[in-house]
Length: 244
Ligand SMILES: [Zn+2]
Ligand SMILES: [Zn+2]
Image (tube, rainbow, N blue to C red):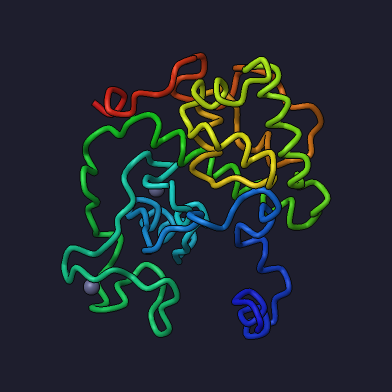
């Protein structure tokens, strides 16, 4: 059975649609839990797109499940238009992006929940690193050999366990706040879910791109990256306290 990408590629006469998807990272990133099950959008971005380009589009990062806010405006993404309350379809067949598929209202007029409230730093960090992944994915789609393989990821995890956990997988798992079985599973399969990868990176002060690109040795321990909320934190994250 043909993939959705193949069918869309045939319908649009484009052979580069992988650049618009998370496919460049399919070697290491598990598809499970990767994409959101409802469409979300940033009303502020829609307004800017119309002003600057005359039309709207949905950046790939809005489709990734962990992303709940706009990486540009640091505001919550909208999930439904309050006028009719309808969740927007992924591929509206007869509407233009930026307008409600049900009632035709302007989606840029939506007011996401807590739009005026500053968001937790971990949500903003997540949106920004996921946007980075999407941007880098475009380059990797043109040059797939740049993507890390499952074997690369397995080696990287083993290196971290040996270096930061003295070879003790359980101790390493506790340090980064994941199930004690997670490091073993990552090493055995060479794959990881995006939520787990983000948690691993947030705890160690790394950027997920460091696990997904074949860029040489993985740096050990915390190092300077773009705005991680707790780059030097050594105990598992207390989400409730951070959100408070
Ligand atoms: Zn935005
Ligand atoms: Zn509507």
